Image (cartoon, rainbow over all chains, first blue to last red; front, side):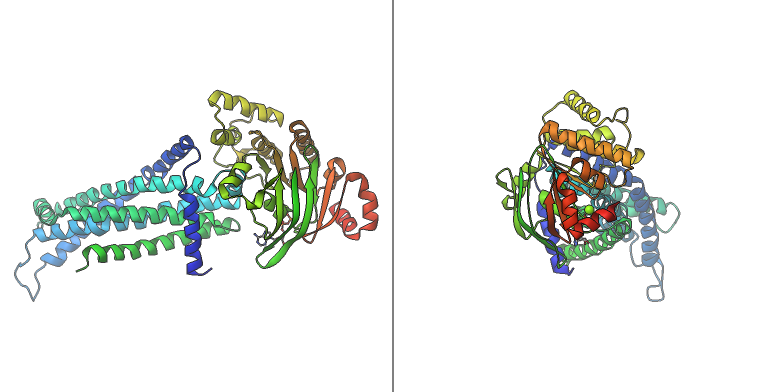
Amino acid sequence: MNFFTEIGRFMIFMKYVLKRPQKWSVFWKITFREMHNIGIESLVVVALIAFFLGAVTTIQTANQLLTPSDLFPTQLIPKFVVGSVVSTSAILELAPTITCLVLAGKVGANIASEIGNKKISEQIDAYEVMGINSASFVALPKIIAGLIMIPSLIIAANFLLMTGGAVATKFTSALSFDDLIEGARMVFHPEYVEIMLIKSFIFSFIITSLSSYQGYYTEGGALEVGAAGTYAVTRICIFILFFDLVIAQIFLGL
Amino acid sequence: MIEVESVGITLGGRKILNNINATFQPGVPNLVIGASGSGKSVFLKCLVGLLTPQEGKIIYDDQDFLSLEYDQKQELRKQIGMLFQNNALFDSLTVEENVEFPLKMFSSMNREERKHRVNECLSKVNLVNSNNKFPSEISGGMKKRVGIARAIALPIKYLFCDEPNSGLDPLTSRVIDDLILQITKDLNITTVINSHDMKTVKDIGENIIFIYQGAKWWQGNKSDLDTARAQNIELDSFFKASF
Ligand SMILES: Nc1ncnc2c1ncn2[C@@H]1O[C@H](COP(=O)(O)OP(=O)(O)O)[C@@H](O)[C@H]1O
Ligand SMILES: [Mg+2]
């Protein structure tokens, strides 16, 4: 299938997904369960990754900016600049993008294989024959849950990134905690939060909708269910980075 | 009653069904028979709209099914029960929850009423004391029963069964056949059963349609079978192969 027919099929899929749920009570119950699966279950891995990433970014940025070189034998760059760079990277890129790439692997693969399994075992057909809009029934709760939980995870990741950075300052005399915070404060711009949230919502939607789509159109057996998971992750990563670029160019391109 | 008029479908560039005509009456078991790969499942999927035939008409008691909008189709499908070849039970739900599911979605019953209806359906298919088991924990015959109970939980008018005996031992097969027959009569619903089980055909075949390579090759009832076999070599060899 070529790229454009697949885009068309995705659009048709979304047309069915974005319909009013047939029974609100059932819909909310499933959505809450999905919020748990997507959000709470991912909290630990996201937190660990954010913490380490924050620490590593701080150490490496400090190393690059504060090491005297032949060209600049004396310390020209104020220390707080490290804090500015780290905090800006965290809010604009590390928290939304890296978190979502991790979630592509965790949440995306999971959704694709769960729905793919329902497809090949004819559970999707069973919904449909009962008079249930199967596309909406399986995908909409995941999409809504993702839109609520993934941005929340990203906000949490932001704090943990800075916590990682703060802890890293404890192991060096080159940079203090106060430098880090001062630098972060100096460059903070509310627009950055907006960009982070825009990325969060777009990436969440990509993760849950693409993986649902990939699962929903699985044909074959157990092997294909596995393949659906892999495909979903690859595609999600590519689309996330593509939209990352588009958003960066739109909001931050000079 | 379901009327099928000149239905034909092409899948993946291959003509799978060609000019099928049939009328299915309520209260009697209608059988669609044929060798594996002859197009029985595709036919059943066309009837319920999981596949859309390019040619022909399917009329459900005066409603032209193929010309309905998606939402109207969904409305009609609330009156349809289906038994899938590999059961298609919801694997994350227990037996009880599987049967309760259509009630939760489409009835205004409260919790108590739903529980009552679930147990009523489960006892109708003689499945008691398994309410809290998961589909993976029960036998093939029990899964069929759950499938039937789920299909009849809501007041249905049409029942479709795709090879209800596949994978079952002969004894259990008879039990499931009898169950389907009894439900068809009791509820006076229009039932279409795909089968390649000869015993089923001889026992309960009132209106039998024999599909051969995607075309209707013969139609009749169980008492015509022997004469038909003498005249119809494809039907005869199908029967011989199935024993
Ligand atoms: N979705 C599909 N796409 C293409 N070919 C199909 C599809 N579904 C079934 N077929 C083909 O149609 C033929 C009839 O299949 P089926 O109805 O499943 O046979 P059976 O009578 O055993 O139920 C088979 O040759 C099968 O390969
Ligand atoms: Mg079949």
